[in-house]
Image (cartoon, rainbow, N blue to C red; front, top):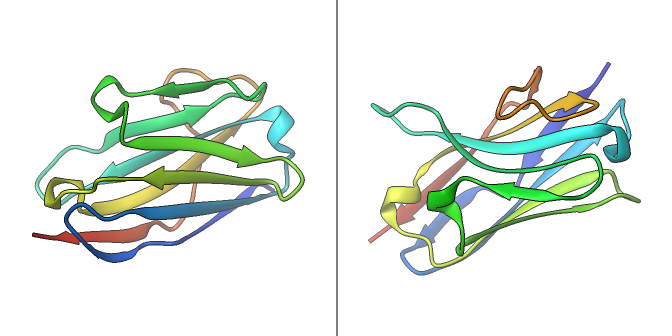
Amino acid sequence: QVQLVESGGGSVQSGGSLRLSCIVSGAPLSDSCVGWLRSAPGKEREAVARILSNGVTIYKESMKGRFTISRDVALNTVYLQMDNLSPADSAVYYCAARTGYCQGWTFDIWGQGTQVTVSP
């Protein structure tokens, strides 16, 4: 059974940075599509980035430049580096996955989420 555990959220001032981590258990990253999505109050859930089983990265257009998704295959962990954060980035960030190939932003397994709060 695949499980995801996120960490790294917290509070930061505008312009600051955070790095989120998602430990994947139950499936190797080489056979998994893993993504980051976020959900803010009153807004629809929004895709951020995903990393394919072969390591190729794909970003939501509006997230390019400030967000970087990466992975450590040895640790079976996926990261989301977030730079130059603004209050608009405040949300619960979710790690999500599906085994095998990515199918757009559709995922079968979800983590518990980690809160990111950016103050002005």
